[in-house]
Amino acid sequence: MKVLADYHTHSRYSKWYHARHSIFQMAERAKELGLSEIAITDHGPKHLFYGISPKQLDKAKKETIDATNKLGIKVYMGVESNLLGQDGQIDLTDEQIKKLDILLMGYHKGTKTNFIKYFDKKNRNTSEQIEKNTQAYLNAIERYPIDIITHLNEYIRVDTKRVAEACAKKGVILEFNSKHMKFTDDDIKILIDSGVNFVVSSDAHNKKRICDVESCLELIKKYNIPLERVKNIDKLLELKQK
Ligand SMILES: [Zn+2]
Ligand SMILES: [Zn+2]
Image (cartoon, rainbow, N blue to C red; front, side):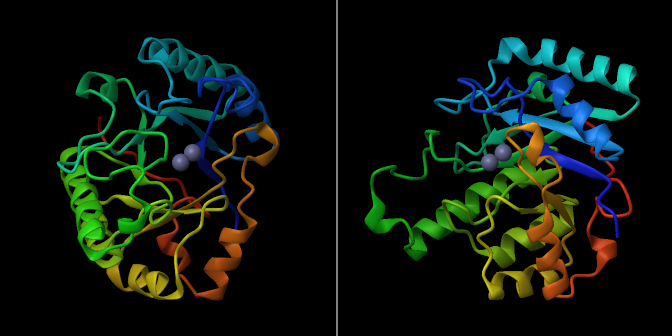
């Protein structure tokens, strides 16, 4: 079993040196590691601290093309967009999405949503709040050509069954993220039953962590997750038309 790609990594375009290395440096390291593909997926523009500036999207895209041509490893331009609205809204326009090869989406602290009261810790896990979170995810899955949902159930919880089933239906991949893994035993059983597919991701913020997915591989073994459902082990992900 060989991991052939890492579809969730950050470059210096995530602002304030939140991530350490340039797109080229990340790609170089991925090539050294023997990967066939890497996606650079900086934080979406509405992240209050680390978001990529929309003005930089074209420049970043050009750097992924240059790195692909110079290094002979496929470097995809992506964004880890932020879920903002209960209607599913994310922090990229349709025009910005068209510039991307790969679209990731997740919820992050440090973004302003219209369905979570940020300081209302007491009500974070009420069934009412979980329902709002779930609606936001389901609507985003309907609205956008999302390839991968990042670290589901980190920071906010959803109805795992409904989100996983919607992902399975729309061909959206769920991620096992070695940095943020909040799935319970029950969640994992639900994911397996839902028929959804997976990737293993490092969420590397520097080149040393690219493809650091050992804990995800252990989880796959522990729960006996069928390898044909993990779309970056021994195979490569087919990306959606943007
Ligand atoms: Zn994230
Ligand atoms: Zn990330």
